Each structure stands twice: as structure tokens, then as C-alpha cells.
Length: 476
Image (cartoon, rainbow, N blue to C red; front, side, top):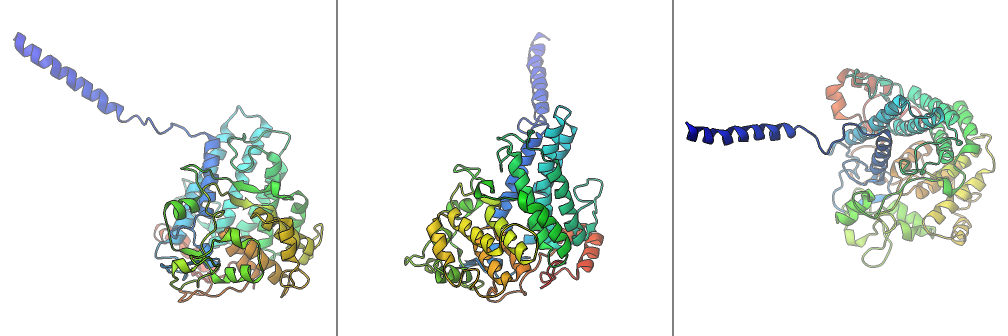
């Protein structure tokens, strides 16, 4: 019996040890029990910037849609085929799941934090809401009617779609409240938490005013009175110098490098090239930004390819070194954009300071300086009859629209929006285009299958779920 006992003791001990080890596997050592609100905020902004900056053909193809880039080999996306890779699904999910959900959870946590001083809490909540407005603005101006009042609500499994016009008006109302709440005398997010303005509440006020101007101007052809009120309220408080620019700054080291660097440089892609439409303008007008926007082809020349046509990669220019640098920032809002908005406001008869020509010149000069040119370069560029505000071809929409299209290079979603509402410049349709110029993205396939009733009602309300359905503000 003694021998049997000695055999079983180790076996029982081992069984006990195994049980303890198995139980420990359920402990998540790398997943925090709770994510801090500031981390959710910075992660949301990083996700937003990443999706706007990327040139992934699965997500963001607007550089091709706006005829600023062309493709060497694969032409599906350049030809307005957004369904093969389900681009609308990815764009939708990126904004709702990766950005808005984190912003909303961050707001919930800050609201529940009793340790925050009232003004600090108000600042943080206002900043979070400004970024929510920014993101909902992208969604409503990409798709039309969208889930809004019932979005991000776990109790609403089949959220209704809200009218796009109503959503757009509410976004401006929210910004009115956010701007009123921001108090520069109190703290907001800390420098380490705020990846855009490093804790400056003053600059968030400027950012919010520029965003209000932009969202108001988008609807100006549909509701001039509301646009006028919002723009005039924003003018004095909006971004007024390049030092106010709202940038998401990437780092030179992985994993926080610019997505274009990751995709093109590290990924070794050889299919993104300059488009002929943009290159012709840059070359024809001796644009000093050309050498920053693009590199030369293998023969040492600047050349743009035809969008939608197979192009030999080595024969055409590619994105410049400044564009694809690992630490190249993504511009969320800037002085260039704001000055173009002010120029347009003057032409629409809105009461803002300065003249349309002054703001037009300021915008172009700031763009050239941002891309490495000098004040002398800007002056020479603006002196050309084809560029000078008084002599450039066309009406104010053509003058401003064309120069804004050039200056917004590498902000492709914004470029797409400006092309849709200003209708200039007139770009060349892609070879073998699958449709007319896309004025919206179609709704995700997942919405059709998982939220079918709401989807069907939304599609009918906007006039049909096709890429050429114009949004309510697209009047021309």
C-alpha cells in the first residue's frame, strides 16, 4: 500500500497544477479592463486621419476619382468601380466603428468622471463633439441620408436613416454649442493626449470655426441664408495663420508612420502615378509645387498618365518624397482651406473681412509656402494671367474651384467634395468609366442585408442608391 500511495501523490499534485494553469489562461494579461478616455480620443483621431490619408484601393480612392492620380495596372477603382472591393463598406465601417464609436465612448467616460473640474470637462466634451461633427460630416456628404440619431446605440439594432439635410443643419447647431462651451482659460486634453493641438483649447476654437464655415459652405447653394449666418459667425474666429493648422503628425518610426509611406515605400507599390489633368495644370502654369507634389519619371521628366488606362509605370511621375515621407502630416483643417472659404464667402455676398482676391491670393501663397516654395515663388505664380484673380478664366467658381483643386492635393476626400459642389475644374472622365462622375458612394452591402428596411427607405428618399444620385446640396 505504501508503494501505491507514493505513486498517486505526484499524480494528484500534477492534476491540481494543471487545473490552476488552465484557469489562468482566462486572464487577459494584454487587454486592459478599461481604456482611458484620452486614449480613445487619440485613437479615434488617428483612425480618422489614417483613412483620409491612405491610398488603399480598399478604402480611399478619391485621388483617382478627382483625377489627381492615375493607376499603372489595375484600373477598377480609377474607372469608378467601387463594388469589387466593397469600398463603401470599408469607408462606412471606418467612420462609424473605428472613429465615432471611440469618440462616443470617450465622451461617456469623461461625463462619468467626477474628478474633472467643470470647465475642463466641458472643454474635453466639446472637443470630442467637434471631432464627431467632423466625422458625421464626412459620412453625410459621402452617402446622403445616414443613421444619425439612432447610430451607435446598442439598443437600436436596426437604426433608422436620418434626412441628410436635417443632419447637416444639426451638425452646425452642434458646432455652435461646442464653440460657445470652449473656454481657453481652462484645461482641455493634455499635450500628450491631444494629437492635433497639443492641448491648446484656443486652437480648437479656430478649428471648430473653420469646420463650421466648411460645412455651411457645402450647403450654400441649397440654403444661402443658413450658410451666410454660419460663415459670418465663424469668420473672425476661424484659422487665420498656418500656425493654426490642424495636423495629425505621423512619426518616422513604425507603427505610427504615414499610411502612404507604409503602402508605397515599405510596400514597394509601383502602380500609383500622377494624373494628366493635374500634371498639365502644374506644368502649364509653372507651378512651384510640382516638384513637391511629384517626382520625375525614369527619364527625368514630369508626366501624367491617363486615368482609367493602363500606363507604363516608369514613364510617368509618382508621388513626391514630401508626400510619402514617413512623418508627413495629414491636414485635417488649415489656413489654405479657410482662406478659399473666405474668398468664396465674399463672392456670395457674405459679410466677411477682406476681398475675394486677397483671400484667394492668401490661400495660394500659403499652399506654396507649405509645400516648400518661397514668397517670391508665390508672387510669380500669382502674376500669371492664367492664375491672377482678375484675369483667370471663368467665373468665381471656376477660379476658386480650380486653384482649390490644386491646393487640396493629397486631401482627396476634400477635393472630391469641392469638385461636386463647385463643379470646377472640369476633369477628364476615366477611360472605360463604369458610370458618370460619382456624386456619392452607394450604401454598404451589409446595410442592405442587415438593416434592409431602413436601407430601402433611405435609398428611396434620396432618389436611388446609385453613385450618380446627387446629394441635396449639389444643385449644379
